[in-house]
Length: 272
Length: 330
Image (cartoon, rainbow over all chains, first blue to last red; front, side):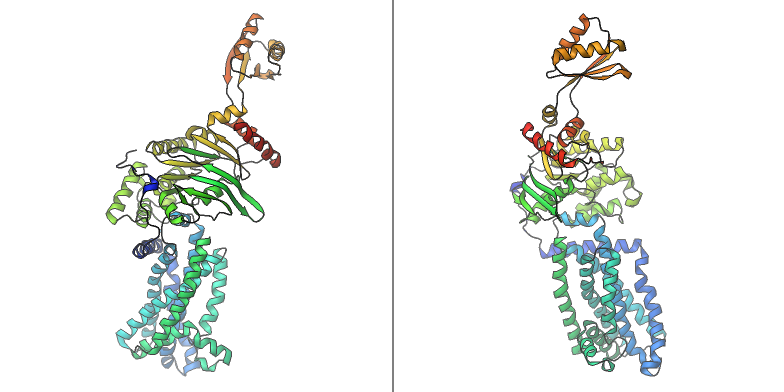
């Protein structure tokens, strides 16, 4: 064994930073995001929920509900396409939590924990990589919509803005499922509890039907549901090309979710 | 590294029950114990992976509980739990851990290449970890914890499950590491491994430290040497046993099938007296050995059961006897 240098400084005398700087935290997060993208490339089946699913669901929901809710499919599309983007991105978030659980059970996470890195980095890294998945889901859903006759009034910039918001919202909402990933005992458990939360979040929203047809208590929840806020903003961006107040509300809703679930997750992770 | 009164409880079970350890700079300190003795739990506590339920520990003057970030910067940890990423290649793994620890891109690549060379993994650099043999995997684990040249290295059962040849290679690697001035805390369930590598050894059983000292100290604490004789004629066996018992006051152990007699000695030089007396009586001897006790015997004496994975049922008796032995070592 050859060494190029030894450690001449006594360990007590080494000048060590007492905490991780913000720049280092970002760099560590991006390194772990890189790791997650390599994993994605090696097991492409994790991409099914953001590729095959939008293709099938978009066409299915448009043709099944279109006539019943809006009279015909064409006039339902401006309503359902942004709704489906919200729904698909939320589904993709569930996978974020489940994969985290699987990752936690593998040996490598303990090594991350003994490294002098920011505690948030191993959680945030895969989440940053998953933004790629939300992007694919949003773009594909718009694509299928356009193929079956959707003509977004917001034009290219409106749609691009909506995709951007969808990706951002996906990253924010994923913190909920990251927390479940840390709390659950195994991948099946995480999947179960996540679906239990995902379905009400999806269906008690304005994704598929106007909220004013719901009973009062449900309507009240649907109005403040962050998923509704995001979907309303997506509609405004894609259909009208306007940055309305609803975009602000959507961003606020996402910020609240992150403010609650990110600290909870990191605290939980530290205790594991 | 110093630890005092370490305690870890899982439910109502005390996995680690008041262990004190002190590891000096530049030494290899071995923690020896059977499966489930609490070695790994203890190491995880010292490595900031598990919170302490009692006691305190410091690494180079930094408290494990209050300054975990500082401790982590001084530590390299290799164990079955702190391993590498199965989904990445060897090169990618080393790059990942180097980047996470603040090495620049070029530096990370150079360090990775250097470590692969050092651990004889260059040929497997681009292979997925799933194609690695057990020995290669352990070497990569070790390489990954040496990226920043940490002054203190924890090795948790570095050779468990390896074949003897690969184990020997791993030992060489660890010896080289130590010769470069690293301090190593090693856990193992193999007595031979502790004997080969460790300057000092703590024997752990059921979460408590039952003995501590150098391998020689531990051996002489239990032990006494034995004189092993193989006789030419099995008919002389009884007479030999009689003579030995009269001279030394203790009955030898006989193995008539192989014409052997094992005579326990208080002092090694008593063997000469026995041999002279036997020659005077015309007893012909095929072979003679004087043997010090092995660490295996030490372990058995200290814990009341074997070091292997199988644990004997009389666990409490073992712990009690062990407690007596601590006094013996001191």
